[in-house]
Image 1 (cartoon, rainbow, N blue to C red):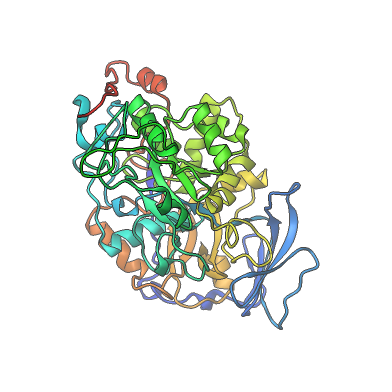
Image 2 (cartoon, helix red, strand yellow):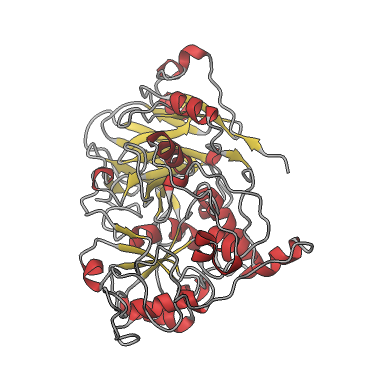
Length: 505
């Protein structure tokens, strides 16, 4: 399949990095929208997505404080001359929330799929059980790389994320106090090894992991405690849940500390991955008020299986959608949606509808991070993290099936960051830069709160041959989104290897 990489249109070298107000006139027409500059309030007329009855054409007023002031047909701006965006047929959604990514791996591109699958994350992390170690998966905290990774997310409609590192002034970073950007909450805790098992410790009958595991007090003291648990398909993965869900499983401490099971399953807990969780495990999560984050592409690419998302839904457990990381996951939320749709079609027989997936990427992400008082829905008092999508046959599908080219406008706290060039030009915004995504002229307005211009990032990432910012269609070497059986059928001459799930002394 031909891959069409992001093409950047400079519109003349002198315009790069400059504002685009010369294109603007009052009440300008922008591809089906009528746009009027003004401020400091913003009035948006579009199809407004809520989790209530069928969505319809409505109005949202954003106050000068960056919060939603009013939602409804009768809403009016409080002051004179607000900025107006009227887009009949376009779809206005809460900003997407990605509660699971390792953004410090932005520079590690996925390799061609060779068919190898694993039963536990330590097999690919450490080369255990005769498996291939992912030696090139080394984090890089270069601020430009982090900004490039966040821009990938932003272009797909993400306005908040949990990513283990951060770039200021782009998306909200819910795991950093300096990245909350006005959300009046504590940063969430992001724990990759709650059992202190980073050296590659796998157990199946006890909890003799590291000497400094996380405890119940760590969860209780957190805004939200997001932890990797049961990332794998074998008994060693499920054993992690046993050691974190009851104090009765292993009561014998090991010399030096740790070694006993503890109950971390309480309302502030959010489990990342959970591939090895069984229905009775999920029932425990439901009783304890625990949330889940589903990363289908990375799970399927590494393990050939993923979270039992239908069982979780039947139990009423809130589920969010997360991209995990670039080496085995999705480059942005658009591609994670694409994988979820493919998996639903091929393995779940269409059990998930468009509203289900939209909910996972909005309120699901807000619930996973316990930020739902401020983010995740369009309601008065919420922060105005809003994304306007091009029209679609179904309003929820307009979000779920959108590519970055179909994202018409992204606002974080009422501030425009990205969108269609004609629409942004009509708003007469300063300091915006031009680019073309999927054949659509776009603009980025990111210089207000962060040090990098788009031109600088594009040039530096190009010199380093870093994975592209966006693609028109599937990106290069995108990790597969298929079950173990589907991979085996696709690679008949390359039998899959799956390691055993054993105990490590």
